[in-house]
Every structure is written in C-alpha cells, then in structure tokens.
Length: 237
Image (cartoon, rainbow, N blue to C red):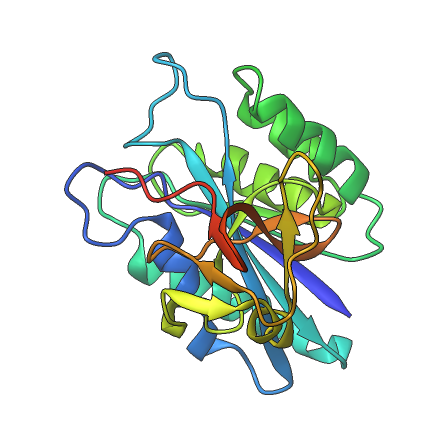
C-alpha cells in the first residue's frame, strides 16, 4: 500500500530548515515496515496576496507499507516531526491519505486550484474530508499547501522529486542505464525524439531533480553531443 503525507511548514525568512528539508529528514523516523519511495515538491501559486517565504511550495512524502496497522504510528510520527522541526512563527499543516481513499479526487481538484488561485482553509478542509488534515501552529494556513501536495502527488503528473533513490549521492555525469537502475527514466525532449541509449551519458549539471510523470520518476533531457545529454531545469542561483 502507499501513503501520501503532505507537509507545508510555511517557513519564515532566514530559516535553516524549509519545508523540503523538513520532509526529507522524516525518512529516518519511519516506523518499521515502511519505506520512503520518494519526496515530491509541488509548486503552488505565487501571488503577492499569499504569504510565503520564497517559492510557495509544499512537499509530499510517498511511503510504501504492507501492514495497515502501521498507519497510526506513521501519522503520529509525522505529527511529532512537524511539531518539533517547524520554524517558530510558521503556520505548519499536515495531510495524510492512502491510495484508494475516496478523498484523493477532491484533493487533486484542490491541488489544481492552489496552482491557479487563492484558496481558503475551509476549501482545504472540505477537500480532505475522509482523510487526515491538521494544523500545528500559527494561522494553520499550512493545511492548504499540505492538502494540495497530497492531491497533486497522488495524481502522478506534477512536481519534482527532491528525494528519490539517493539522488543527492549520484555523480554529476551518469549513464542512462545507471539512472534506469535507480528507477529514473530518462526522457528525451529532442525535436526528433531520439531515444537515449543505455550507455549514453547524462550531465545533471550538479542538480538531479526528476519530474513526477505518469506516477514515476522521469528525467527530461536534451541532446548536447554524441551520446551526451543534459538534464533541463538547472538550479536557479
């Protein structure tokens, strides 16, 4: 089975730990019998009327497990983690839903709305009915982004991975076959749709961040030479 745990810390300027790092640091706290499949960052609407620190993003930890009995402990540990690690002055929120939950359809619509317009807490609460949604300080505005992260990630077609198969430990230049072995599919955006060969090399430019496409990790690349590809979307300075 699979659980989607959305976090939104709504961190403050100068904070050492933003939402993405907070979610990635949750992995060592997972109960026995749980495995982190990945962490996906979701970009929400950037609008001056919305209070955010830098990018107005939230993130979702995707956790696989076999025995449903661990769900209670998983939720408890997620709540304890966000309460311990969220920044003073932030408005953290947490959402948890599992694959097959009836709420996922409404959570997806909520997530899509959060990418296009200002959304209220009441809308988030209505969308998450039947799943877990909780605020853990401040105005509780984080419940809006946390619910959006679950809906968008569970749908499988938006966001980028900030953790997946130890991506931060991989070299800057890596073969297509090695990425495939990590569960990362290399997808060519070349106009002629040339298929990258297994022995071709991908230059990640020091910032490997696959996209969530079709419920899987996909790395979009462009051709840069014979058997050489470059991932798109380098880190902004």
